[in-house]
Image (cartoon, rainbow, N blue to C red; front, side, top):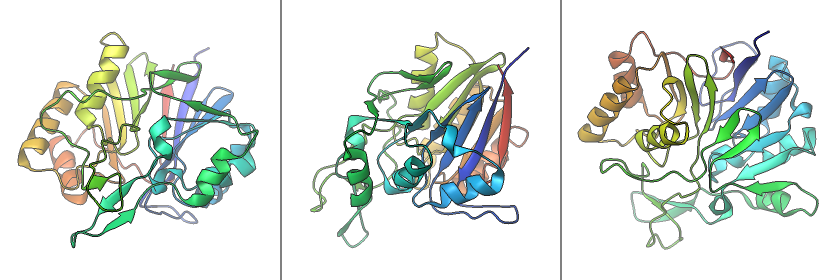
Length: 280
């Protein structure tokens, strides 16, 4: 009998069902047979409340993986650990480092992990694993690890810096995606794709030996993308022959509208409560 993998969006900027709430952030619950993992945690304990409303049991989580160390993807870690204290936290070592964004007036604001999350992660006894190279979370579910930057038209998607003075650019080396294979092709879950969605897909294609893609869901941080980046991103996504594309979170309104225009049959809503089922 074939096993199914069900992806449920627990946190996203928008919610379109009664009793659910959205917040600026992202979290996916991935159920593979009897086993489950969480990819990102949103920015508050909303992940727990939405999970309860959707009938998702977080207590059975084996792993919690972070796409990167920004607050809107890591802020629910402590709340999730309260539900699943034995879950292993998977994150790139740079995820816990300083992350800032430069404001239009030149000042900066911290966008990294909140202090209480850093303290929770550092608590003795917590199970943690750093991910630099591709890493298997549970059977068949993988993190990309650090993603090589090979395109000439993609950047981290905004004025991100590593210091409060706003001097040192942040390469966001901690950015990673989750992926798994299905008979129809690879399914990719993006956090923010700070490495670039095209770089991400190239890397996954390389580590999977050229497997085709089926679905790409999540944030693509195209909110400030110029004309060339958008055109070349659309071209790469068209070459990927996606059956399903779910732009979400930080993709940006204009970029999301462009993607829906370019891929009207593939595009789908990816908001709180959205569920996607795949055969494996």
